[in-house]
Every structure is written in C-alpha cells, then in structure tokens.
Length: 346
Ligand SMILES: NC(=O)C1=CN([C@@H]2O[C@H](COP(=O)(O)OP(=O)(O)OC[C@H]3O[C@@H](n4cnc5c(N)ncnc54)[C@H](OP(=O)(O)O)[C@@H]3O)[C@@H](O)[C@H]2O)C=CC1
Ligand SMILES: N[C@@H](CC=O)C(=O)O
Image (cartoon, rainbow, N blue to C red; front, side):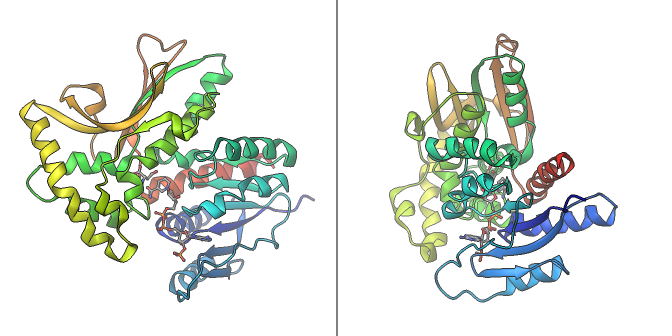
C-alpha cells in the first residue's frame, strides 16, 4: 500500500498560522488531507504529528536567540510535501533540491520562481528529475486563478502578448483607503497589521513584490524575463530604504509628504493612484500611475488585484481577473488547494 504523504510547514507567521487553522477546519469537515509531520520557523523545529495546533503555539512562543535556525527536513521522504510560508531566500534556494529528491513543494514564497532566472529554471528541471510537483498558486494574486489561466492559455496554444494590472494587494488597499488627509504611514501600519504587506513592507512599497510577481507570470507565459529587465519606480524614500528594522516604524513617516503631493496632484486632475505592473512588447515596468477614475484598472476595492491578460484569443478584449490579492485566509486556501491537488495525484 502506498505510504501517506506528510506535511512539513516552514513559517508559522501570518500565512503559516492561517494554513494550520484551515487544515484543521477542513480535516474536521472530513476532507482527505495529508497529516502534519513537523512545523518550523526561524527559531526551530516542532513535532506536529500528534497535535498540530499545539505545535503551532509552541513554535510561535519559542524564544528568539540570534541567528535563524537551519531548516532540517531529513525526516521527510520522497512523496512528502514541504509547504513554504516563509519570505526567506535561503528557504527558496532549497526548493529545487527538495523537488529533485522527490519531495513536493507548495509555496507562498515568491523567491522560487520570482527571483533569479537560473533558480526558476532549476526548479522546472528538478520537478522533472524528481517527478515532484511544485504548487505556486499562492505566489501571485494570493491564489486568484491568474497563473493557472496563463498556463492554460499557453497549453492551449496561445501566445501571451501582455499582462497589465494591479498586482499588489497591500498597495491596492492603501490607495483605496488613502484620502490625502490622514498620514499615509498610518495606513501602512494598518495594512501590515491586517496581514496584507510582506514581513518587511518596503518590499511592497518599493515595487519589488510586484517585480517578483511579474517574473513569475512572465516565466509561466514562457518568457525568460530577468529581474533587471523590469523598470521599477520605488515609493520608498532613501531614509526609509536605509532604516534598520528597529527604526522602520518611525521611518515610515518619510512616506507622508511625497505621497500627499502625488495624491493632491492626481486629485486635481480627477485621477486615482494605482501601482501598476506590466510586461509585453513595450517592455516591463512597475510604477505608480494616476489613472482616470473610470479606467478599468481603477475597479475593485479593498485589497483587490485587477489584471488584464492579452493573448492570441484575447487580443482585442483582454481577459480580466479581479479579486482579493492579499490576506492570510485566501493565501492559506491557495496553499491548501495546491496541496490537495498534489495529494489526489499521488
Ligand atoms: N500576506 C499575504 O497576503 C501573502 C503572503 N504571501 C507570502 O507568504 C509568505 C509568508 O508571509 P507572512 O506569513 O505574512 O510572513 P510572516 O513574517 O508573518 O511569517 C514568516 C515566517 O517565516 C519564518 N521564517 C523566516 N525565515 C525562516 C527560515 N530561514 N527558516 C524557517 N522559517 C523562517 C518566520 O519565523 P519566525 O516566526 O521565527 O520569525 C515566520 O514564522 C511570504 O513569502 C509572502 O510573500 C503570499 C501571498 C499573499
Ligand atoms: N504583500 C503582498 C501579499 C501577496 O502577495 C501584496 O501586497 O500583494
């Protein structure tokens, strides 16, 4: 009889905790799911086979004592599943190795397919070598059917001409809320507390998060885009970029004056601010744009992403995908969707 796969969850923060909670809810409803073997965070490893929620509490309460703990998943075997809910480059650097050893990887961490092209290519090769699956639905649009649609269009013979849209849930939320009166920095704190931003919100504000998402989408479309080919206009002033983690909160204040100015200028023209990412024949870019209020990319609210895909069949009228593009619940659901898809194929 084939052995049941087991889960190693890396990352017990906003997304990792929501993953455990949803796993437990689905299991109680009788959904067939692989069981947990272990949880890990930067502080250590925690046995989760008997009581995952207890293990999560122990992981979240563990003391911080210096350097991040080394990930050790030697207990896992071929057919098991690593769930990466970290934002760690060191963890993403190991995806290909795990896949090559037949361990499936499900990830919310964009630094697998959204970093160096060579790393993304190694991940693709390792899936074939190890006959292992890579679930990355959560990395773009927090699981919106975006990557899936692009892959299905390509599999159906379409070339992807262009992708353009609002791909940052946190920046969508910020510009939906910001009224030019209250300080922008206060809204950034709220977005962080709501779990929409990256662990370091500068990754969102600098456009880096959207750059990673464009790389993932372009590569899914068969375009070998490199990070340096995307022109990114950052919203982060130099003092904020240079701030140490302990000074980050105070340094957010440096956002207030420049963004008030951008807002007022747009307001005078009857326009709305949106952080727009795009790639296509005219190149690839990420930047803040002032768009007419009735522009298609101004639709949606809250943390909604709104993306237009142009391909052979959608050349005149693009395919539009819209919905919540950030948040612990939708992201955890996307991770579990991938995990269930993999488990039923085993
Ligand atoms: N929030 C959202 O809406 C979405 C998030 N994502 C992605 O999900 C990922 C997680 O985000 P989020 O949960 O908000 O982040 P958090 O900061 O809340 O959690 C990150 C977790 O990763 C752990 N970690 C960091 N480094 C390591 C390491 N080397 N080894 C093991 N664990 C490590 C941290 O450990 P410790 O607890 O010890 O600090 C922490 O538990 C990110 O990659 C993000 O881009 C994707 C889509 C949407
Ligand atoms: N920080 C990200 C979360 C999802 O990827 C965002 O704001 O979109």
